[in-house]
Length: 97
Image (tube, rainbow, N blue to C red; front, side, top):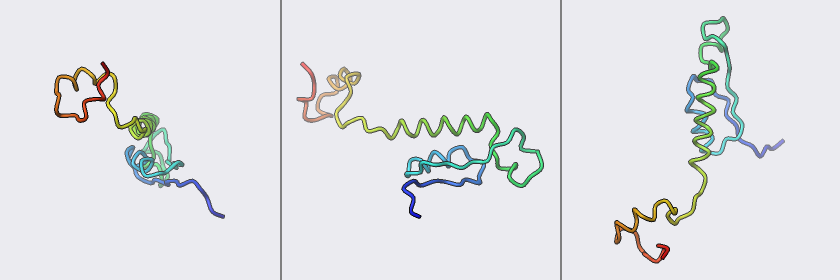
């Protein structure tokens, strides 16, 4: 069976690897979770604690937000900066009168 979703089965202790994977198209992340890395079991050494799991989720959200296309023109909040640095941005007809 073919699947349309790409996932990551991450067996590292990194909270960034899933975020990088999302930027490359992963939509499913499998990560081990624990309350204590010193508990017995082979996966507890690299499993994420609640604090680190939240860090991973925040990194993924930041990555998703950074990947949102916001257009090629400048934003209204940049108008003053652009008007003070004329010549660096062309054409200048983007400036609202």
